[in-house]
Amino acid sequence: MALLHILVTLKELLFTCDLNTATDYLAQAKDSCGLSFLNELLRKFEVLQYLCQKRQEPDPKLLELQQQINTWMNSHTNHNTRVRFNI
Image (cartoon, rainbow, N blue to C red; front, side, top):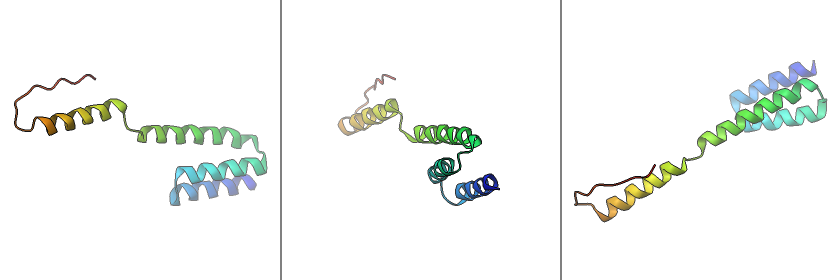
C-alpha cells in the first residue's frame, strides 16, 4: 500500500511540479520506507535529472561562435570580410 501511495504522489508531482521536486520526494520516500524497488527507481530519476540539466547547458563551441560573430559584427559592420570560425 505504501508503494502505491508513493507512486501516485510521484506521478502527481511530475504533472504539477518538476523533475527536481519529484526526485527529492522519491529520495525522501526511499529513506523512510526502505523498499529496494525505490533505489532503482531513484537512480533512474537521478540519471534523467542529470541528462535534463546537461541538455540545458550551453555548448561552449556555440558560445565561442556567438562571441566571434558579435565581435566581427561590431568591428566590421560595413566591410566585406571573410570570417573564419574554428569549430
